[in-house]
Amino acid sequence: VYNGYSSAYNYSGDGYIQGVEVSLQKDFTFLPAPFDGFGIYANAAFIDSEVEIDVGDLGDPILRTVPFFNQADEIYNFQLYYERGGLSARVAWSYQGDSTSSSFSDNPDMDNYRSPRESVDARVSYAFENGLQLWLTGSNLNDHRALNYRNGDEFFVSSYEVFGREFRLGI
Image (cartoon, one colour):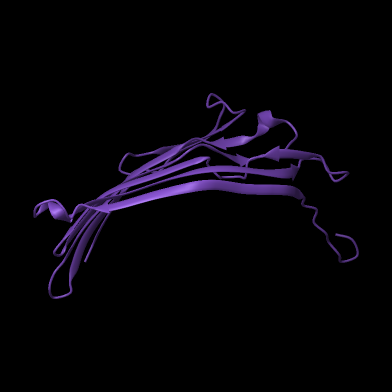
């Protein structure tokens, strides 16, 4: 701050995100009752990203190329579901590959990474004819723990987080 004025110096150069995503959804209506209520949903995304960041001091920019922060190169989702009458049930699995969470210096050994994340979630609900609905959800059923690390090596742990499973019941 100088004479009531302040300025910020942030710099990022050119960057891009590109990739491909494929999805499939199939209802198994060809199966005999009551199995005709089953279905699957799956998708996969393959992503490439890059951005130039300034890792220098307040002088001339020193550019370094890194992947976009928190952007995994691979993302997968799969759901098995059942819907028939008032009953609805889903079990879902999701996966996000590792990603760079921050890069603040010209030394890549100081970069922070987020390890791959996997999650299994489920939901069961029943809608009664009078409009009342009962539901139960479970999140993070596999009890995934988040690992953040440095130097591109999970040996150098910078943080380890435990979230636990979560269940909710509602009417």
